[in-house]
Image 1: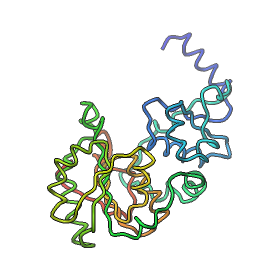
Image 2: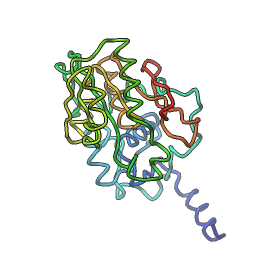
Image 3: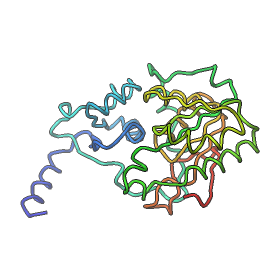
Length: 271
């Protein structure tokens, strides 16, 4: 950075002393946006807001209170607003869990009111298991696969065995994924000895609704999955949630910090 750029940055830092606005990059999807929204909720007294472009606002439309109260478009950002990146600070410690951070008030006040993600008593009261597997850019982009890729077949096999030993076999499986063809080919043979499986191809609202209302939920290392876990725990406390110990390889020796203590955490050599 040149001296002129440093001077300009310093001057802007002095002038921009208003409300903090999380300057979210375009790559941020719903799961990450919900974490940033929780940051804004925790600091609502100082006016924290989340920047969202058209695509991000479309996904936030699932949660209209969060979109309308805590997010802003670029033309709503004031010149004096601070541009901040709250996700780029110190990484969580190896002992961190989200139990203390993802609080009920945020979910109840910002996510559930007027949301299309509603309670489904028929699904909640069944003995179905929803399995959410993220494929997509986790495996189509080399850098992402290096960071987040895992042996999902071995993980699901191990997780399912642990769940059945503890709670018996489910009556059916509902598979939610952005790679349903892969799931049919690779997971189908694992699931069929236990129960029939339905592979549902839906939009984001459909997928999140299924994950939220699952009476038994098996998720992968995805922020979208985690939020399905958090919101569903608020609606249906005590349900079974199974998650991998692993999230990504760049810190914490791979250990996910987003997990809740009451979830069934699966370790193994498939990470």
